[in-house]
Image 1 (spheres, rainbow, N blue to C red):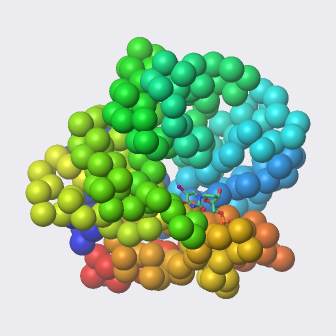
Image 2 (image 1 turned 60 degrees about the horizontal axis):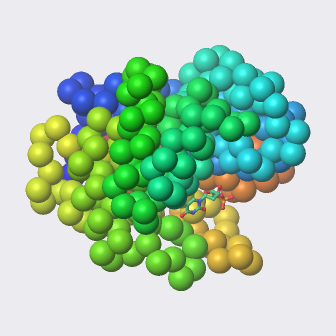
Length: 268
Ligand code: 5IU
């Protein structure tokens, strides 16, 4: 694993242009926070993205929960991603045969590939799901698109463990130009021991909250500090930030906690 290196050092020879850009954004803005903006109206989503944009490296969306979705929703997100220099990550969790996934990624009402820099997928269907996304990315000749593999989940009783998680890592290695890394709770084994020089997957950890241990529907939280100690690179936080009485203050607190832990880890 390269987690002892700084994002700037990891960016230098990284094979993925999008991962390089992610690392550069993190360094420029001193943040490794991914805001999970699970708001349900266009106005609320765009307001939180504008207010919190300066504190985050990535904005994570669930675009299918927006009740008044239109092109204005995604045009607004793209504009704010440029204004505040963050990437957009649609948490779509693709999980179907490749042919269907291509249609879901390219078209429909949501046209996800047009506006989301990052999407994620589960490898339950096998490697075809990643192949399908890679094909779409290549045929559209988009150099700023990437995929995260959902290798673990934070919810109680998750079945994404053990050999399933190991298979996620093995499939990631087959698609190094498309797969940026993983959504998981900690650094994954199977990477550090036999990692080659060009292999440097990014770890996104969800289920991060500074005040709560979980929710009534099985969510389980860790803090920014424990997540970073476990080998995370980017911290995904939702309600801990946007549902706070003062979301700007909360975003700054999460940013500082995440960045302090990152600096500790790289020995700065
Ligand atoms: N999310 C998880 N756990 C996971 C995965 C994704 O919570 O294992 I993969 C999503 C769900 C939600 C966000 O959009 O991350 C967490 O939001 P809260 O911080 O509000 O719990």
